[in-house]
Length: 257
Image (cartoon, rainbow, N blue to C red):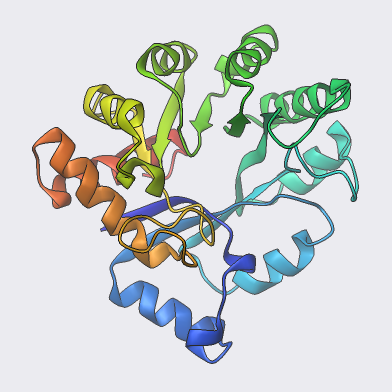
C-alpha cells in the first residue's frame, strides 16, 4: 500500500526488534509498506548496506555521497558509474548542496554534485536531491548540468510553492517527509495541497525527522502512513488515495510498473 521513497535502513535502531533485521522486515510487511528506497550517504558503509538488504526484493538502493560527508571517499564519476550499474540501484544520490552544515569555499560540494549528475545522466537513473540553505543554487546546478534529462526527487521538501514550481518545471518530483506534519511547517503544507497529483512522493528519511506524534524520537519506515494521513487531510482525500498516488508516482519515476 505504501512506498517509503527515502530511508536509511542501515542506520535505524533495531533494538526493538532484537537487533534482527528480518524481524523488522516482518513488521514492515505487516504495516503494508510495500517498497522502500534505501539511500546511501557515503561509500565506506555502502557494502554493508547492500549486504543488509540483499535478500529483500522490496528494497531498492541508491548510490552516492551526501553533500556534508567530508571524512570519507569523494566519488569520481567512474566510481559512481561502476556502482550504479547494479540493477538494484535505481537512483543516484543522495546528492546536492548544503550550506547549513558546511561553510567556507564549497566548490568541492558543487563539484561532487556535478559528478553525481554526470553519472546519473550516463546511467539514465534519477537523482535524489538533498538541499538545505542552498535551494536556488541547487536548482541552478541542476539546470546548468541538464539534470532534467533524468529528473529525480527533491527529497524532504522544505521550501515554498514558488520553489516547488521551479523544481517541477525541471522534471523533479516533490517528496514530503515527517516535517509536513509539524505545526510550524505552513509553507510545506501549502505545497502539499498544491503539488500535482502525479508529482509527489512520501518518505520518512528514517531514522531522522519522525512525524507527529513521534517527533524527537527515532524514525522508522513504519511511520510513513502518518505522513500520508496528514497529506490526505490537507488535500481532503483518503489515506488510501494518497498511498496509491504516491506509489504510482514512485513506480513511474523509476520505471517499476
